[in-house]
Image 1 (cartoon, rainbow over the protein chains, first blue to last red):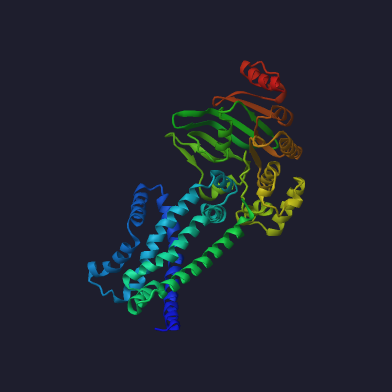
Image 2: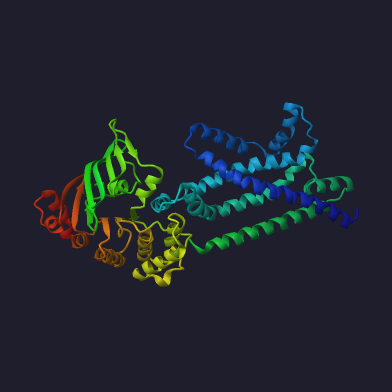
Length: 215
Length: 254
């Protein structure tokens, strides 16, 4: 296989990798916020259910979770799962990352001084106004470095989709390596991942700078 | 006209009773100072008056309307919904540690609630905010963020923020305790100016001379009860042994 063909195939894999990445970010961040609400809920039943969920998501391998999500519809209902590969990957990544994001949101929300809530209450802000206008913007500033960490990990974790034979970049690279007995695709893949993460880190740094106008 | 009436207020934190059957009222234009040693319950009574703490007994009225009362079974019932909103719009609170919103500019700190909570006209709110800032000597700081200001400037912004809501009564919870003596003077001057305009105020403070000078009436609290309630002159010439002892310590210090 020529180098340019290999590059083409890895690039199309990269498009799929990027797809997993963006879908997971878009879905898991809001879900993580809601999960953190459940984790901080005064309702003990809800709080404990969420605690168990987070504990399982963090305590078992992501690869195993992906396989579970993928095979469950077949094992439980005998459903045809051939077209379920991509949704399974997105669901698997989303519920896993939401658990981590939830704990990050929780740490940020719980670190907010009570005085901010009290000042907002005295000024007549409703609960949702207080959260959206006063609390959340400050929480985002506080948790951004931890979010960056998770996002960078996610870029690399997309390679776990190989376990469901989804043709993202790492799966493609592995196949070419096996077929052509050359190590080059791995090196190219490594460069792709690194450049992707370099861009991600730069973008996150830009956000951090934008929020550095106050302390 | 009584702006605030608090009758037979009880407040406990767990087993610890911090407010024991306190009654007080504030008439329009009146300035009431509350003094007393740390842990006497003076900040707590202010937090009860501003609904930051829920009372365990008694009643709170603003402009004659019941914000909270105790029913026949001893349960405290608080006003809810629109009625609570209306009652809460009567008062503002200046905190010891300012509690400005750090991500908002000075101007937005002052104008955001009047615009988005009270739904007032933007131009009118901005004009009022500029007037207030001018009065506070901070007009040139309108676009600054709280972290760029000194403690005294931050406290003046928080006073402007409270005033822009047009409250009928303004509470101060040890407004100078987080400030050095120089910055304290800045804040006391602002409160003095408000007093000249007959703003109704309740001030919890450790600044004895200031309380004496600015108030119409002083309450001396200790261990959750009112020890003495009288005019500044009488308070500072009190026969009450406890009052004398407490104020005497301040005299010795000065």
